[in-house]
Image (cartoon, rainbow, N blue to C red; front, side):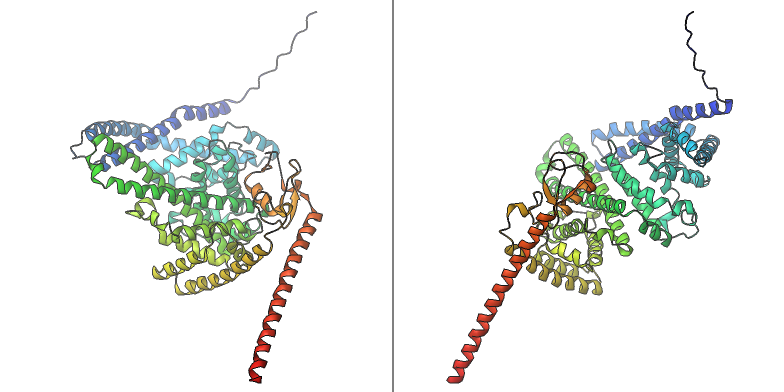
Length: 563
């Protein structure tokens, strides 16, 4: 007879289950998309108003403003119509009730153990994205109604979904801190009775989730600019949490390796963002000069307005980057006050020293004049506040000898004359208080002494054999290791610092972990013997010179006696 294939029976679901999933998909295809459309229209209205104001206002005779006013009126009409339908109070209450129930169901599934977590991880991604977008956008359009809704279950779901095992999409997880930010009190004032402070599910889990996401967002697709927004939001949440001692303990118990990766990313952000913002300030200075000339004013209106629009875009970008950089520096500041060990670890101390050196040099070196622009606050540039925060971080770290050595050995940015000029500037502009000023000057004296010692050491070892030098930094290796695939020998500290940013061999891009490094004890011993030999020779030469000098002084005094 013919073989009959058994058809796999389609699993049937209850009417409630089917209606729930259909409703969620309907909201995703209709309501949430229209909320995004409303957001775009509001943004276009703001940009249109800003352009009109920049061109001289609504009463200007500029012919382009007439067209912009027509566009503005059309956008406003569309916005009012959409708000009327989308923000109806009865509709919003029902939608909030549905998403609140969905949050409770998701938490119930999480508490069912491994099987429930598998179900939760298999949900369509739009469950999480729509919930996040609804609460984020309602905070913009209907903040009063949003604040009246119960938030605890939603916040617990958000914290759960920050875990990469629950939600793989890094871009989507990057939206979740924006929802968590809605739970913070106004102005992020300390609140000992707040749910994020009193409930153990938050105090034990929130720090690992936030710091983990801060690092993981780096490796998501198309995340270059979005990651900075996510990290800014995380910094604001951490700033609130850090006011409560329970989170200090949570941070100290965080995995050390993961903490060092987080600090490395934090320093990377502070350096890149502030550097880009300062480069844009230099461009702004050039543009301001050019736009104040008679030659610019004689150009036709189209050319002028196009250039003014480009300048406006540059202003927005600079202000955004400056604010993000300031948030990163603030985070380094308040974390280092109570927990500076990760910043001063052997893996990061040179990185942190170079970062601070670079900005002291940038704000006080010969090219500081290029940062002077008209109305700096308009671009988010507050040099006095920024420098004060950087120097306070510097003074905290300067209590550590390894940090001082790393600072003095930074050939790229450390300059005794620039640091002396910085001290004079800080005193003249009252950047620091008297106590901080005395500490800073005392540190400068220590740095100068260390710099001279290191200069003598470098001269002593200047003829070191090539095989003793690290191929990346061209410095004498302290702990040489071999990379297993490329067979290149490098200094352990240099390669570990590279691996914080990329887990690949820098010479052939093959996969590489710290555990793969091969120790080179014989070469290490050879380097140590070379250094000790050079130091002995130098000490012997110094002793001989001192003996000759003493002998000469004795001979001179005896001749005087004879006379």
